[in-house]
Image (cartoon, rainbow, N blue to C red; front, side, top):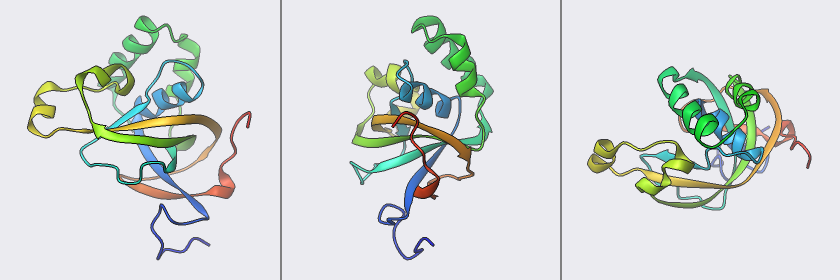
Length: 163
C-alpha cells in the first residue's frame, strides 16, 4: 500500500503519473515508439524534480480542435503513418509510457515541433515551461484515471514493452 505521507515522487511503490488530454498523450506515445511525436510537455509551472521517471497517461479528454493540427504536423509534415497515429489517438483513460523529465527550462518558439504547442500572445503574458522528456518507453497500456497534477501509478502495473 502506498504511503500517502510521502510525496508522489518519493513513494517507492508508485510512479508519478502525468495525465494528458488527447492528442497530446498519443503524440508522446508516438515518440516513445520511435516516431516523430511530442517530447516536450508545456506547463505554466516549473518542474522541480528533473531526472524523475514518470508515467504518461491518456486522460478521458480529447481536444478535437487540436487533433487536426497535430495530425497535419505529424502525419502530413513529418511522415508518421496514419495507422500508428490513429491507434495512438484512440487511447483514453490508460497509462501509455514511461519517460524521464530530463530538463525544465523556459519554452521557446523553436520548441514547437517537439511540444506541438506555441501561442505567441499567451506565452508573452505568462511564459510557459518546457518539460523535456527523454528515455521514452512504451508500456503495456492499462486502465488509469488521473487528474490535473500527478497521480500515483503503482509500479507493479507498469510493464515496459520490449524491455
